[in-house]
Image (tube, rainbow, N blue to C red; front, top):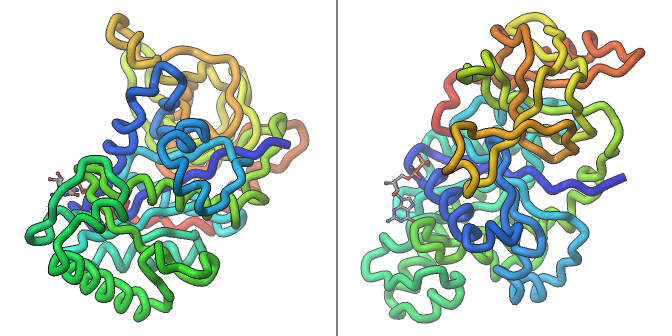
Length: 354
Ligand code: GDP
């Protein structure tokens, strides 16, 4: 048994800052990249626990978090259908979510859509109130914690922010959630934390990451237990043509192990497709990518959680959001996948939610 990193998705209305936040999270750990500070996956970025401890040490000790989980695994690509193509059984592709709301705009149609998805799949989430730097008169403190920056603001700005947070709490209440600004939360199981941030300057991101870790540690460790030699389970994020490789599928593997040459089962719009893996690819480290024509390196096997590209024959009609299974001997995977497809909510209008 191994405990894998929790998979974290970012949801929210278009332009509320999903991409900017993910870019900041990636960028803030770049200095540590060569020291193993970050692992680049296909479609995901993993920040190992040591790096998190380094960045957020103080807050982690405040939250009294034990580090049994290996890190946080952020799904990179907002906008793909896989998050909404969720599995009823076994929960969602994401173990945790960040719901991002522009603090100046408040709830918008896709914010409500995202909340409905989170409710439906009971995904624990944190609300991020983004763009605090746009509050009139806000003084930016690059990379600071929210509390540090907040304490340096003029009283009028503080009350302006407090008011906006109350408005968000009101909206969340209408949706059936009790919430508080994160530093006022007394019970993480029953209250949603609201973290004010600026995705551009990184203010508040430290607290956000520490809280994600805390939530995962406290409520998810059972769900994160995986067997390292069970046949892999995953979800297809994207189906893509690559020069020299043909049609490939970018997939997040959330359980088990997947090996070169394995038989796998996936779904097209209606049916199960089976094929044999020709190669499993991971991104090259950035330093090597610069001097190479290739973006990927071939690997023999991968254990969850991982984001990989799979090259194989017969992938042309596979749909994004499709489940992926490594076939073992006796399993009736076909029935299982068809059942899963029945349970899937494929929402084609979800552009921008993620
Ligand atoms: P997405 O559609 O949710 O991925 O939103 P983006 O990350 O693309 O952000 C939309 C716009 O808002 C871009 O122009 C960003 O530069 C800007 N933006 C995002 N976060 C912040 C922030 O914290 N402060 C400010 N001032 N602008 C932001």
